[in-house]
Length: 146
Image 1 (cartoon, one colour):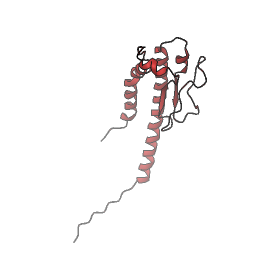
Image 2: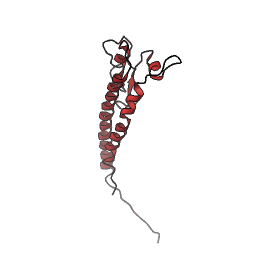
Image 3: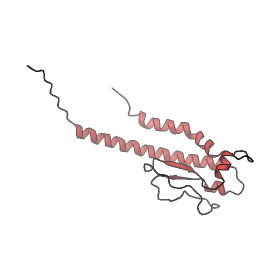
Image 4: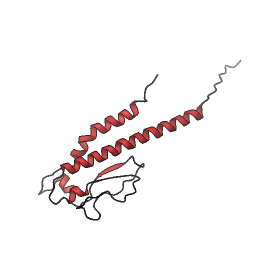
């Protein structure tokens, strides 16, 4: 007589439905979190940038994957083409803060003749810990085992 085990699994369709719901809820929460922090970083960068004419500060902008904007928003002193290009990636899960003003990288990183006056990196690092903590909270709530 052969040993035999029969297993019947039920509720697969319900489990799949619940996983899709979980994914949707967590994705939406991440979108809200990332958007909030991207605009916080933009504000901090604008506050921290060295200003001569205001063009660089006005060009610092936020754009995201799936945005209807072809370029980031620009301020009153920005010229056509200022702002950042639309990033690619999962819709509203990829945010970019920056500027496409030609001298923006020189201001941030410096040159042989000019010391760096960073404004983007300090703005990001100001919020980096909060971003990690907030994303962790989104997923930690439901990660209980047992």
